[in-house]
Length: 136
Image (cartoon, rainbow, N blue to C red):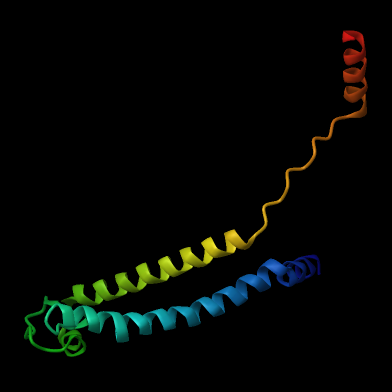
């Protein structure tokens, strides 16, 4: 029963619950960022570069036709999907930047804790008072 009780104490701690909530929110937020990149950013980037869809850029490695959509080419064999990698990398950069900004804002909102007053043992304090009185 000792291990079960120890696990219960660990699982009920606030940090574990906070972590679980953060993972769930992070997964949902990741989907939002994924949609932002795939549905808004990449079409704009594609429009700037002449209507190109980066997610379908690949190099066929198994003698597939180079003009197939990526999904169809993958069904026929291995492909080097560098366009998909570019899209996912952009996803990561946007997500990392947003999290960085959130942490910055939270750090600014935290009040700086005043430094703790210097606590000295009573004996040292008495010795200092004696030293100061002898100097006079």
